[in-house]
Length: 193
Image 1: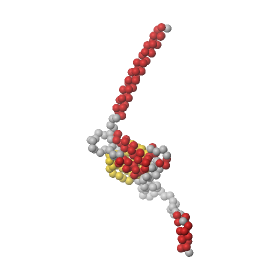
Image 2: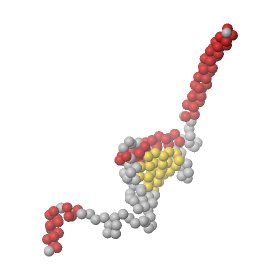
Image 3: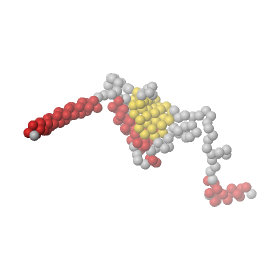
Image 4: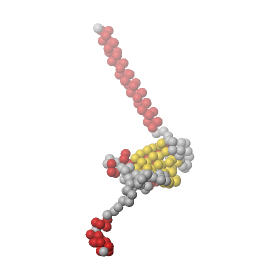
């Protein structure tokens, strides 16, 4: 029994030494990871040289997407939407949500090393609205204010040469504005007589 007690005491003594060694190893690994986090990820360029990316802004009346790629479009640098910045669904397409998304995009592009952007604005297009949503203008202005140089601005909304049938039917959307106003309605009847 005395032998077992001695072995148990030795094991207890050895365990704290291993724990301290493990803690030191963990601390060293954490320091290495911290050093890696501050490492520059972008291409090696001179201080005043412009590094271009392509910013695809897809702005509908439901949401605003900001997607930044390299010039070929194959590599995605960052992609953020207005819906990621606000909680309620109705505010996803708002200019405020687009501005907040653009601020995040600019911060991530600084890490990558992109300091200039070509803009490609896109509305819903097709059978839908061809005008970009309310977030497009706000996103573009926010990117410019956050220190990014703007190159070319291009509208890439898909416009069909011959579309599917538009909504509204054969005779189009009919407004009943004149019949709701009583005095105009009466004057129209007087003229007909």
